[in-house]
Length: 264
View (spheres, rainbow, N blue to C red):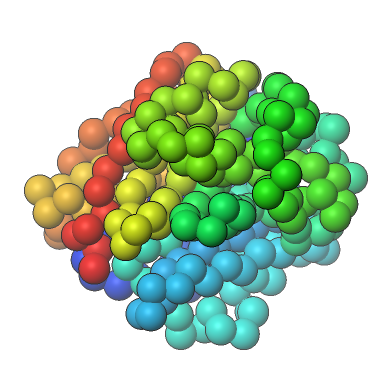
Protein backbone atom coordinates (compact mmCIF):
# COMPACT_ATOMS: atom_id res chain seq x y z
CA UNK A 1 0.00 0.00 0.00
CA UNK A 2 1.44 3.30 -1.11
CA UNK A 3 1.03 7.08 -1.10
CA UNK A 4 -0.04 9.40 -3.91
CA UNK A 5 0.32 13.14 -4.56
CA UNK A 6 -0.90 15.24 -7.46
CA UNK A 7 -0.57 18.93 -8.37
CA UNK A 8 -2.48 20.46 -11.32
CA UNK A 9 -2.38 24.26 -11.17
CA UNK A 10 -1.69 27.37 -13.26
CA UNK A 11 1.33 28.34 -11.17
CA UNK A 12 4.44 26.21 -11.30
CA UNK A 13 5.54 24.33 -8.22
CA UNK A 14 9.17 23.54 -7.42
CA UNK A 15 9.78 19.82 -7.64
CA UNK A 16 11.90 20.11 -4.49
CA UNK A 17 8.75 21.26 -2.66
CA UNK A 18 6.93 18.20 -3.97
CA UNK A 19 9.79 16.01 -2.75
CA UNK A 20 9.55 17.65 0.68
CA UNK A 21 5.92 16.54 0.84
CA UNK A 22 6.81 13.04 -0.38
CA UNK A 23 9.51 12.76 2.30
CA UNK A 24 6.88 13.41 4.98
CA UNK A 25 4.35 11.13 3.28
CA UNK A 26 6.96 8.37 3.03
CA UNK A 27 7.08 7.90 6.81
CA UNK A 28 3.49 8.83 7.66
CA UNK A 29 1.79 6.24 9.84
CA UNK A 30 -1.25 6.35 12.11
CA UNK A 31 -0.94 4.95 15.64
CA UNK A 32 -2.95 1.85 14.79
CA UNK A 33 -1.37 1.45 11.35
CA UNK A 34 1.16 -1.39 11.10
CA UNK A 35 3.23 0.01 8.24
CA UNK A 36 4.28 3.46 6.97
CA UNK A 37 2.95 4.76 3.67
CA UNK A 38 6.29 4.46 1.88
CA UNK A 39 9.95 3.56 2.21
CA UNK A 40 10.35 1.02 -0.62
CA UNK A 41 10.77 3.45 -3.50
CA UNK A 42 9.64 6.78 -4.88
CA UNK A 43 8.92 8.45 -8.17
CA UNK A 44 7.84 11.76 -9.61
CA UNK A 45 6.56 12.67 -13.06
CA UNK A 46 6.09 16.24 -14.26
CA UNK A 47 5.34 17.96 -17.54
CA UNK A 48 8.07 20.38 -18.61
CA UNK A 49 7.64 23.65 -20.52
CA UNK A 50 7.80 21.77 -23.83
CA UNK A 51 4.90 19.52 -22.84
CA UNK A 52 7.11 16.48 -22.31
CA UNK A 53 6.45 14.19 -19.36
CA UNK A 54 9.68 13.79 -17.37
CA UNK A 55 9.87 10.67 -15.18
CA UNK A 56 12.31 10.07 -12.31
CA UNK A 57 12.26 7.03 -10.00
CA UNK A 58 14.44 5.21 -7.47
CA UNK A 59 13.94 1.96 -5.58
CA UNK A 60 14.67 1.11 -1.96
CA UNK A 61 17.95 2.57 -0.71
CA UNK A 62 19.93 2.43 2.54
CA UNK A 63 18.43 5.77 3.55
CA UNK A 64 15.27 7.56 2.46
CA UNK A 65 14.39 6.92 -1.20
CA UNK A 66 12.93 10.43 -1.39
CA UNK A 67 16.15 12.03 -0.12
CA UNK A 68 18.11 10.09 -2.71
CA UNK A 69 15.73 11.12 -5.48
CA UNK A 70 16.07 14.78 -4.48
CA UNK A 71 19.78 14.57 -5.33
CA UNK A 72 19.19 13.36 -8.89
CA UNK A 73 20.50 15.70 -11.55
CA UNK A 74 17.67 17.56 -13.26
CA UNK A 75 15.46 17.93 -10.21
CA UNK A 76 17.30 20.62 -8.29
CA UNK A 77 15.73 23.51 -10.23
CA UNK A 78 12.81 21.80 -11.97
CA UNK A 79 9.25 23.08 -11.69
CA UNK A 80 5.94 22.27 -13.34
CA UNK A 81 2.20 22.90 -13.44
CA UNK A 82 1.40 19.17 -13.70
CA UNK A 83 3.00 16.75 -11.22
CA UNK A 84 2.31 13.20 -10.05
CA UNK A 85 4.29 11.77 -7.14
CA UNK A 86 4.31 8.35 -5.49
CA UNK A 87 5.92 6.69 -2.48
CA UNK A 88 5.94 2.90 -2.40
CA UNK A 89 5.40 0.31 0.29
CA UNK A 90 5.46 -3.03 -1.51
CA UNK A 91 3.02 -5.88 -1.02
CA UNK A 92 4.63 -9.06 0.38
CA UNK A 93 4.58 -10.85 -2.99
CA UNK A 94 6.61 -7.99 -4.51
CA UNK A 95 9.03 -7.41 -1.64
CA UNK A 96 11.89 -8.88 -3.70
CA UNK A 97 11.51 -6.02 -6.23
CA UNK A 98 11.94 -3.03 -3.91
CA UNK A 99 15.54 -2.25 -4.88
CA UNK A 100 14.64 -1.78 -8.55
CA UNK A 101 13.55 1.57 -9.95
CA UNK A 102 11.41 -0.19 -12.60
CA UNK A 103 9.20 -1.43 -9.76
CA UNK A 104 8.63 2.12 -8.49
CA UNK A 105 5.92 4.43 -9.79
CA UNK A 106 4.66 6.46 -11.67
CA UNK A 107 4.25 4.32 -14.78
CA UNK A 108 3.88 5.51 -18.35
CA UNK A 109 1.83 3.72 -21.01
CA UNK A 110 2.26 4.82 -24.62
CA UNK A 111 2.04 1.55 -26.53
CA UNK A 112 -0.75 2.22 -29.02
CA UNK A 113 0.70 5.25 -30.76
CA UNK A 114 -1.91 7.95 -30.17
CA UNK A 115 -1.96 8.46 -26.41
CA UNK A 116 0.25 8.89 -23.36
CA UNK A 117 -0.96 7.80 -19.95
CA UNK A 118 0.84 8.49 -16.67
CA UNK A 119 -0.44 6.65 -13.60
CA UNK A 120 0.11 6.14 -9.88
CA UNK A 121 -1.61 3.40 -7.91
CA UNK A 122 -2.18 2.35 -4.31
CA UNK A 123 -3.55 -1.03 -3.32
CA UNK A 124 -3.57 -4.45 -4.95
CA UNK A 125 -5.14 -5.44 -8.25
CA UNK A 126 -6.10 -8.99 -7.37
CA UNK A 127 -6.70 -10.04 -10.97
CA UNK A 128 -3.63 -8.34 -12.47
CA UNK A 129 -2.23 -11.52 -14.04
CA UNK A 130 -5.52 -12.23 -15.76
CA UNK A 131 -5.69 -8.63 -17.03
CA UNK A 132 -2.12 -8.83 -18.32
CA UNK A 133 -2.89 -12.07 -20.17
CA UNK A 134 -5.94 -10.58 -21.88
CA UNK A 135 -4.21 -7.41 -23.11
CA UNK A 136 -3.14 -7.23 -26.75
CA UNK A 137 0.47 -7.81 -27.80
CA UNK A 138 1.17 -4.11 -28.34
CA UNK A 139 1.76 -3.51 -24.63
CA UNK A 140 5.24 -3.36 -23.12
CA UNK A 141 5.66 -3.49 -19.33
CA UNK A 142 8.65 -1.87 -17.67
CA UNK A 143 8.36 -3.90 -14.46
CA UNK A 144 8.46 -7.24 -16.29
CA UNK A 145 12.24 -6.93 -16.53
CA UNK A 146 12.15 -7.85 -12.81
CA UNK A 147 8.63 -9.05 -11.95
CA UNK A 148 5.29 -7.76 -13.17
CA UNK A 149 3.92 -5.11 -10.81
CA UNK A 150 0.14 -5.18 -10.52
CA UNK A 151 0.13 -1.36 -10.49
CA UNK A 152 1.43 -1.26 -14.05
CA UNK A 153 -1.54 -3.11 -15.52
CA UNK A 154 -3.83 -0.18 -14.65
CA UNK A 155 -2.60 2.37 -17.25
CA UNK A 156 -2.27 -0.33 -19.90
CA UNK A 157 -5.81 -1.55 -19.26
CA UNK A 158 -7.02 2.04 -19.63
CA UNK A 159 -4.96 2.34 -22.82
CA UNK A 160 -6.43 -0.90 -24.18
CA UNK A 161 -9.93 0.47 -23.66
CA UNK A 162 -8.98 3.55 -25.67
CA UNK A 163 -7.55 1.37 -28.42
CA UNK A 164 -10.84 -0.53 -28.64
CA UNK A 165 -12.49 2.80 -29.39
CA UNK A 166 -14.05 3.93 -26.14
CA UNK A 167 -14.00 7.58 -25.11
CA UNK A 168 -11.99 8.44 -21.99
CA UNK A 169 -14.88 8.44 -19.53
CA UNK A 170 -16.05 5.05 -20.77
CA UNK A 171 -12.45 3.78 -20.67
CA UNK A 172 -12.27 4.94 -17.05
CA UNK A 173 -15.53 3.19 -16.20
CA UNK A 174 -14.46 -0.08 -17.83
CA UNK A 175 -11.08 0.06 -16.10
CA UNK A 176 -12.81 0.62 -12.78
CA UNK A 177 -15.18 -2.28 -13.37
CA UNK A 178 -12.38 -4.66 -14.40
CA UNK A 179 -9.88 -4.21 -11.59
CA UNK A 180 -10.58 -6.25 -8.46
CA UNK A 181 -9.54 -5.52 -4.89
CA UNK A 182 -8.89 -2.39 -2.85
CA UNK A 183 -7.42 0.19 -5.19
CA UNK A 184 -6.80 3.88 -5.76
CA UNK A 185 -5.51 5.02 -9.14
CA UNK A 186 -4.79 8.47 -10.52
CA UNK A 187 -4.14 8.79 -14.25
CA UNK A 188 -3.19 11.68 -16.52
CA UNK A 189 -4.02 11.16 -20.17
CA UNK A 190 -2.75 13.14 -23.14
CA UNK A 191 -4.84 12.37 -26.19
CA UNK A 192 -5.20 14.48 -29.33
CA UNK A 193 -3.78 17.55 -27.59
CA UNK A 194 -6.13 17.28 -24.62
CA UNK A 195 -5.17 16.35 -21.06
CA UNK A 196 -7.55 14.82 -18.54
CA UNK A 197 -7.15 13.73 -14.93
CA UNK A 198 -8.91 10.54 -13.83
CA UNK A 199 -9.34 9.47 -10.19
CA UNK A 200 -10.54 5.98 -9.25
CA UNK A 201 -11.09 4.67 -5.74
CA UNK A 202 -12.45 1.21 -4.98
CA UNK A 203 -12.78 -0.44 -1.57
CA UNK A 204 -10.43 0.39 1.33
CA UNK A 205 -7.01 1.97 0.74
CA UNK A 206 -4.55 4.40 2.34
CA UNK A 207 -7.05 7.16 1.61
CA UNK A 208 -7.54 9.97 -0.90
CA UNK A 209 -8.19 13.69 -0.40
CA UNK A 210 -8.83 16.16 -3.23
CA UNK A 211 -8.90 19.96 -3.13
CA UNK A 212 -10.21 22.18 -5.95
CA UNK A 213 -10.78 25.90 -6.46
CA UNK A 214 -12.95 28.00 -8.79
CA UNK A 215 -10.09 28.26 -11.27
CA UNK A 216 -10.31 24.51 -11.80
CA UNK A 217 -6.96 23.87 -10.12
CA UNK A 218 -6.60 20.57 -8.27
CA UNK A 219 -4.32 19.18 -5.57
CA UNK A 220 -4.67 15.66 -4.20
CA UNK A 221 -2.94 13.44 -1.67
CA UNK A 222 -3.46 10.10 0.07
CA UNK A 223 -3.03 11.76 3.46
CA UNK A 224 -4.33 15.15 4.57
CA UNK A 225 -1.89 16.07 7.35
CA UNK A 226 1.36 15.74 5.31
CA UNK A 227 -0.25 17.72 2.50
CA UNK A 228 -1.28 20.54 4.82
CA UNK A 229 2.22 20.71 6.35
CA UNK A 230 3.71 21.65 2.99
CA UNK A 231 0.83 23.06 0.91
CA UNK A 232 -1.59 24.33 3.56
CA UNK A 233 -0.67 27.99 3.04
CA UNK A 234 -0.91 27.60 -0.74
CA UNK A 235 -4.39 26.07 -0.42
CA UNK A 236 -5.58 29.00 1.71
CA UNK A 237 -4.08 31.70 -0.50
CA UNK A 238 -5.69 30.21 -3.61
CA UNK A 239 -9.16 29.49 -2.17
CA UNK A 240 -9.03 25.71 -2.44
CA UNK A 241 -11.87 23.71 -0.93
CA UNK A 242 -11.89 19.99 -0.23
CA UNK A 243 -14.15 18.19 -2.70
CA UNK A 244 -13.32 14.60 -1.78
CA UNK A 245 -12.26 12.99 1.49
CA UNK A 246 -11.69 9.25 1.86
CA UNK A 247 -9.96 8.17 5.04
CA UNK A 248 -7.70 5.19 5.60
CA UNK A 249 -9.74 1.95 5.54
CA UNK A 250 -12.94 3.80 4.58
CA UNK A 251 -14.88 1.70 2.08
CA UNK A 252 -15.91 3.94 -0.80
CA UNK A 253 -16.25 3.78 -4.58
CA UNK A 254 -15.48 6.96 -6.52
CA UNK A 255 -14.79 7.79 -10.18
CA UNK A 256 -13.97 11.34 -11.26
CA UNK A 257 -12.60 13.02 -14.39
CA UNK A 258 -11.27 16.60 -14.68
CA UNK A 259 -10.18 18.64 -17.68
CA UNK A 260 -6.63 19.97 -17.21
CA UNK A 261 -6.92 22.76 -19.80
CA UNK A 262 -6.42 25.34 -17.01
CA UNK A 263 -2.85 24.20 -16.41
CA UNK A 264 -1.55 25.49 -19.76
